[in-house]
Length: 308
Image (tube, rainbow, N blue to C red; front, side, top):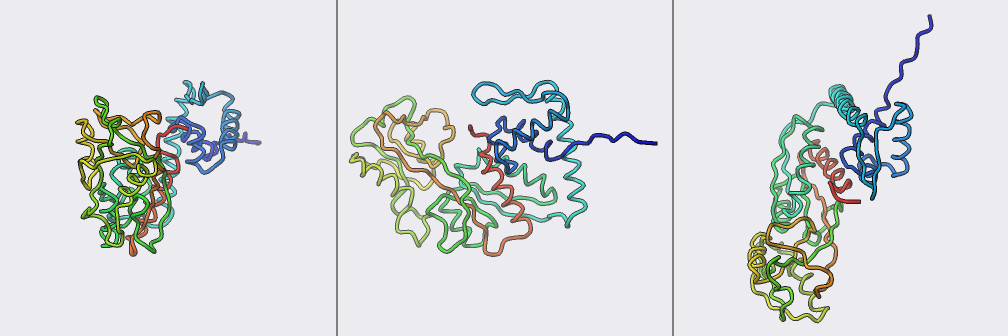
């Protein structure tokens, strides 16, 4: 008796399909699965050809949506991939257990930390993560003191001769109040980190962020006066919200109520990009640290939920 061959799913195709559905972007999905955008498009064609129906609808401006068949497939695809991953974990090396300590620059935490923790919890369900979101100066000091296994901090603050991997860049922007016009005053009132900031690493003669802001103003021949100093971003935002000063943060994400970014046509000099690096402790807890580092790189490579 000749048995009919039962068709089966290619899990790589399903994994790409789920990535597209979750990222709502072919570009970000391609980064997430480690393929080119052209290769991802071919995978979608193969999947839809195997199913004999369309599951993904591409709209204007590169938007991506699932039709009713796509939504039905998404639910079952997640179940199948989860089962596959569970079987692989159970059959491979011993699961990762224990606790790992992660430090992340505070300005990145709201956008990236939830996805990092979610991915790690699936990759290593037996492990726990202790997280501290704080200033990069503090992270650098605690890394040297072996208080963290892994940190993500701003460029210019990583300890010398310490291996580091760049994971993220963002455009720094000036911040002002949405109810005041202090960014138009002469001289420019400035809220900035202190020259003698107590959290600055001892090997640095000055705060890299402070010197970058002042250099940008001086190169633009823009006069300024420092009206407020603090080592923490939140404390610097208070006088800005009150209309007393402007400042800048090293991340261009959404701002709290009462604040807005200064537009490029409002006269302040353009600031350089902010770069962020991932560093491991000299003697990290393994294999959990390597597992977490993989999830960190995957999340930042995908750009979280950023636009194309």
